[in-house]
Image 1 (cartoon, one colour):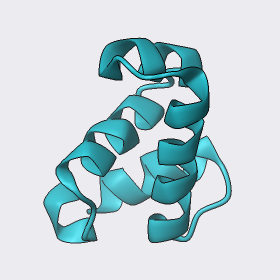
Image 2: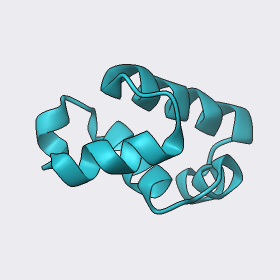
Image 3: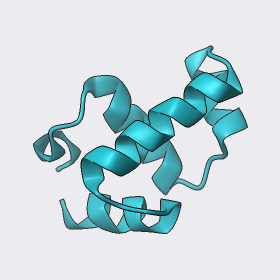
Amino acid sequence: GAARLQLSAQQREVALMIALGQTNAQIAEKLGVSVNTAGYHVKQVFAKLDVHDRGEVATVLRRA
């Protein structure tokens, strides 16, 4: 389902972590990047999915 959302593989991974309730710090740790970089990826996911908060990411993924 998430593959149909036109997200890159990394963006899909970040979107799934967001949907699971992980923080930017947790996402950063898993990806091996800084918290700022994780925040950038989160913003990119928000923009591509046209959402404004983490709860909406989970909703979009469930519908996909």
